[in-house]
Length: 291
Image (cartoon, rainbow, N blue to C red; front, side, top):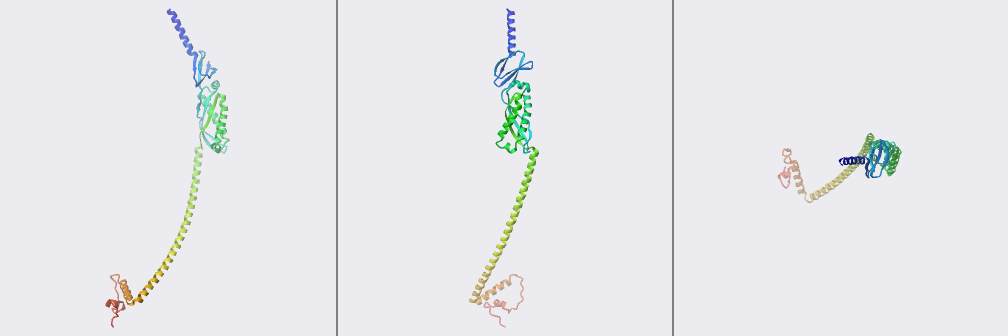
């Protein structure tokens, strides 16, 4: 009985090993290649529990879309402008058997797809201008790039779902030249505007100086006229006053003469005391001194 149990246990163990080496699961996001002694014999794309021979092995591949970042490259456009193009792509494995036979794994796939995409970029963009790339034609250009890249990807068991340009810039030396040219142009315009401003300032300044001379001359003319009119009015008033009271006028004028002549304390006057200049010093009536 113990011998029978041992035999049953051995058979169960053998069955378990056979089942372990013969059964495998393909998930919803996978596809597989069955290999026998290193040679692919079947491709499995439907998910579920699958059976193989114990000496066969299975290689799994992604069924989902995979990302690819090709290296940045320089492209010469049809208008002879140079651009550093940074692109990205998405691809999927559509024929796992062909994929295994040509590139083996994802690392090999990426190394093969990158030059294919870059070559398609150079071919398509080499026939386009920078203006076309920046316009609505960009969608059609990217579709042409994807189509040409797919012509090289399908023989490898892959399909490019999307190819896009992430960024396109002028090379550093070109950007520097453009910057220097723009700087020189702006400096030239600044000098031109500055010269025009100085010329306009000179015109305004000359016009202002001319107007100032005219205004000052007119003001002087008016001041002389007004001064003359004032002097004439003063003379008339003085004449009227003198005519009304000659004695008072003579007295007033003498007082003004005394005040102007004796402003400073060190004034020395050499005059005869009997002079008419001092007639009001001795007599308020201004009577002349007796001889």
